[in-house]
Image (cartoon, rainbow over all chains, first blue to last red; front, top):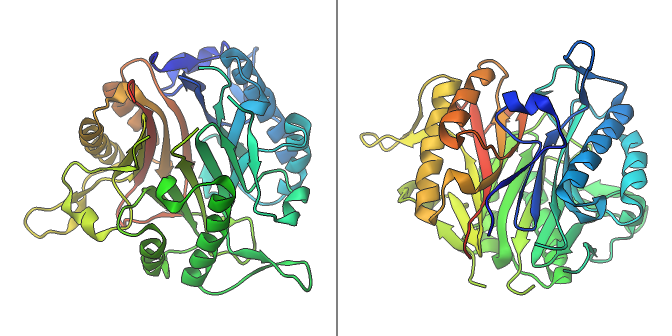
Length: 134
Length: 134
Length: 134
């Protein structure tokens, strides 16, 4: 089996971090806890935009890039875990899941945490995918 | 490899939710965060019964149904994660684990969270299982 | 496929617990939430030493023993999850990750929890590894 393979859609900031956006080994893909921080092209600082639903959609757009870089799709995701700062606004995120997963969903957990690492993040998600081919 | 397969022991409420009770792909089974909510046949509302130990046993009974629907057993579970509202009563849950796992246990994590999604839930657990045959 | 295999580097205390330090099945290794408790050889009590960075290094030394007992290395770890009592001191843990992972990192999540099971633990980590051979 091949070694642990770093999956990075081209996000430079990860050269300073001690984890990868995602890692693939064999046919398994582990996607790191992903929040709605985006690299601001002007200042180079990470920013978080929007309310919880907007943040959740940004997370899914980022994970879409990760999946593409790994040769996978949302159909390959088998589980997700949502980490919430608050339950307020959480119901609205179901629409985002329908948008990206269609009508067949992965397993999921969701918990309210005391705090998230990124200061303005309201929600963060990690995921596991199993690709069709090794 | 086959596609992501929804595992549902027949719980109608999941037709309204954006995650599956569990998902199997190949020989891997991902069991969603499961709390002690039960569908009340009279009112159709979800209810949570009992103290933490009673809730934990209800969780294991629900996961037993998930495992059966997936063709798996508690022997196939390789890890669990407990999400607690409080440490109070947690020691008592060890008896439930002995009851369902016998003397050979999976890996586990356990953390105290700020809140769980279901209002009266004291504890919730997710799990991963690896089946003997793909 | 073989049954769930308990991985224990020789830690007697686990004979009283209802989870294993780690479990291997096939080529997958699930490492339990590991904190900096150490078995005090004099009193037989578990103790936690140091600040968050020292605790994190102790965790990695314990996980090193688990990996060795499973025939795996840090190169085989595909994801980790850090559970923090506080963000204070967390930045310093990056140096520990560089020390044990080198320059190629696993996927990771990190959340601040309300509490950890061990009273004086500041940080806890679990992990998944995929071994090169089944």
